[in-house]
Amino acid sequence: MTALLIAEHDNRTLKPSTRQALSAVLQMTDSVDILVAGNECARIAEDAARLEGVRTVLLAEAPKLAQESAEVLSKLVVAEAEGYSHIFFIANAVGKTAMPRVAAKLDVSPVSDVLAVKGPKTFVRGIYAGSLLSTVEVTDPVVVGTIRPTAFEPIPTKVEASPVESVMVDGAYEASTFVKYSETTSDRPELVSAKVVLAGGRGLIDEAGFAALESLADQIGAAVGATRTAVDMGLCPNDWQIGQTGKMIAPELYVGFGISGAIQHTAGLKDAKVIVAVDKDPEAPIFEICDYGLVADAAETIAAIKAKI
Image 1 (tube, rainbow, N blue to C red):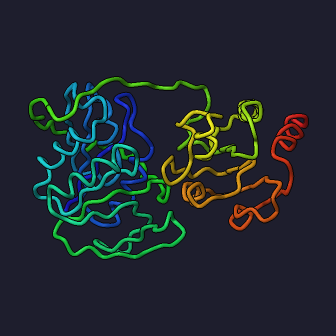
Image 2 (cartoon, rainbow, N blue to C red; image 1 turned 90 degrees about the vertical axis):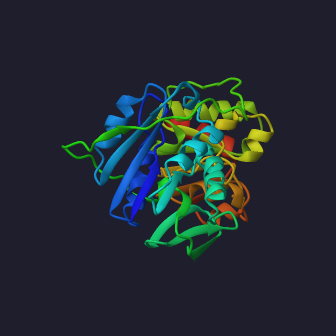
């Protein structure tokens, strides 16, 4: 059995999630190929070729692959699917949308958000926003799914690189058109890979509360996250959102300020090593999952911490 893993990258660097997802796929099969699809990303393919356990890296380069279009990527993966027993994407925005397209084209039932591997076709995945774990066994000839990378340790690099092979990319995909790409730049650590994350919720009340949270994060070199409620209130940008419809994180330390702990949010921090909660409601659900809890006003607590630093 041979698996195909679709790498995550930004056409500049190979994301750490690829190393973590590779760790999961190697528990399913001993032979893994990695598909690097993008534009002018030969260096990324070379980095992927040095990951332990990789048999071959397939490099697909074309301008239309630069924008992470799920439609274009899924068409490419289907074209390269023959001979693979497993095809896995990383559970990010493009992976979650490309994966079901591939499963439909191959006429198989997909497995989403794999958290643990019990066998070549037996997996553990979260259901009901991660509040329960379900063990599922796939009976289809080809397993197609997504992997939550934060649930796995990254694979190390090796000295000798695996071969890199170029694959042909079909002509233009006419069913969708790229409009624009917006990128937010920040000196803070990336949210999904940060070791320390400070997150804010409704309890910070207003933009001033989030400004204080940002200031504290900058002082200690932490990333900043938020709940969906805070994003919907316009208190912070969408790319800060943690949770089922946001980003999945696995920091060494997560501190939530003014976050009640709705399951939609806590589903995104299941893999955090230490969870600290600050909320003035002693009955808040987040106190049921945190390692350390403080019943206090979130804004006042941030001000007190800043005064001590």
